[in-house]
Amino acid sequence: MSRKLPQVPPEITALVPYKPGKPIEELERELGISGAIKLASNENPLGPSPRALEAMHAALTNLHRYPDGAGFALRQALAARFKVGFGQTCIGNGSDEIIEFLARAYIRPGQMALAARPSFLMYSKLVQVAGGRLVETPLDADYRIDLKAMLAAITPETRLVFINNPDNPAGTAVSRRQLGEFLDRVPEGVLVVLDEAYIDFASDPEVAQGVDFLDHPTPVVVMRTFSKIAGLAGLRIGFALGPEEVINAFDRVRQPFNTSSVAQAGALAALGDDEFVARTRELVWRGLQDFYRCFDELGLFYLPSQANFVLVKVGQNAPAVADALLRRGVIVREMTSYGLPEFLRISVGLDAENARFIKEFQAILKG
Ligand SMILES: Cc1ncc(COP(=O)(O)O)c(C=O)c1O
Image 1 (cartoon, rainbow, N blue to C red):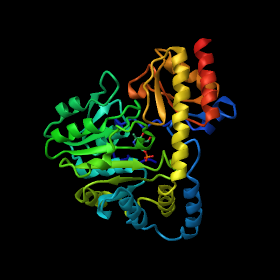
Image 2: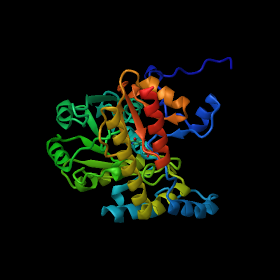
Image 3: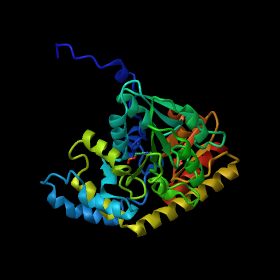
Image 4: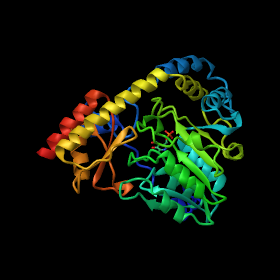
């Protein structure tokens, strides 16, 4: 290559590539070990929904055809399930892509979106790619999303407000009453986005469910994913429910075949796999209790979680503890990139995986 490339604009150069949890195979290669476990990416340890697997196998024979770009069957099922109109549904290549639709459709240079800090890292990235700015309000003293601070931070330039409920990485959740009071006060011209990637794990009946607020005068978009509860993170499919006008805007900015036919088939089947959902929830709730017992015994501060992971305060040596766990073949999430360097986030695994984490964690902290 001898000719000069066009310059990458400085606002793109300034972006930091997303650092996902280390894949198991990479860790094993690096350390020369086998049998490592990953409790770092909030995945479903049970594997994919069996119904989804079956439907995806059947869908393979049709891979020579383009997918249904409108996602008709899946969107019809979503509309029936959540009692909304077909035109109020949309599907994305993971809910990550829905965040991208929102940024592309609603954010222009100089405009602003709002989210809590720390929160899911993709909000800031995708808003910045669209030329906008993400303003962040800190979580409150109880590590909950501070809705009052968010209201106060809304300006005439604010287009989107992201509320991650339950919150990643805190695991805390906003109640129905709190969300209702917040929405009552949001000014005109703002779209509230409820990112419910973890809502299926919430055990507290008071936790707000976005679908109950779709008719609120303040416009609301609810985002959910098949990555977590349905065990389909590798398939890349999520969905959104919201006002038809918003879904129309998404249709204008998205690729025509943004989700694959196999993903649509898998998601459709997963939507009816209630048995798998129940089994996943039970596993997660049991695993959380095991983690809490361990942290109580060690006298560590942690946040009781409404999601499938827990945030625990280990102290200044948290990165070193994460590293020591890695060397023992247990991958957890170190929280420096979220601005919580004293914490670790541990995703619930299978019972035996949780027990292994607990054993190694105790050994490291006591040793
Ligand atoms: C809060 C939150 N939102 C959205 C996503 C994106 O999920 P996906 O793109 O796999 O649907 C994640 C994934 O970890 C998440 O934690």
